[in-house]
Image (cartoon, rainbow, N blue to C red; front, side):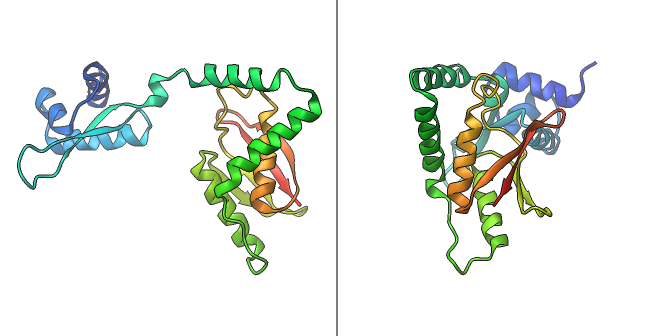
Length: 202
């Protein structure tokens, strides 16, 4: 017997775009219960807000519409990225490839806030982590006897990293550009479940 939340998820998948009111009405639950299940499904990453519906009355607030998240539905981006990288990197030598990945890393870092000479190293690291998290890395930094370490808790390129391990060189260039210091990859796709990478700074 499916749980109420499973029923809500199945209903959203079937209907594609629904409001909390639609769920409450069609699944015979209170609007508060519908909103509760929506909040948990959103937090789990199974659904997302896909739009808004006009309230239909003047001055009324638009109704939020939910659908299955793109992460679950999937898309053609990994396949396209793989083909583009093959096309771009397959016809160049190792030196040209390194230069190209460095340029890509610098482009990714173009909006990163670089600290001035007065910025403390800790503030600089915190700002870099904040920027990386905007890009989806779920990063953090840790103090270490040999110098700070940046932990990338999620690889945004996980769908293609097995075929394109060279993207780690791009990550290194991104970090160096943001931090203004040399970095060295210490661990790559370590751990179990959600893998993480570690870069030493300085």
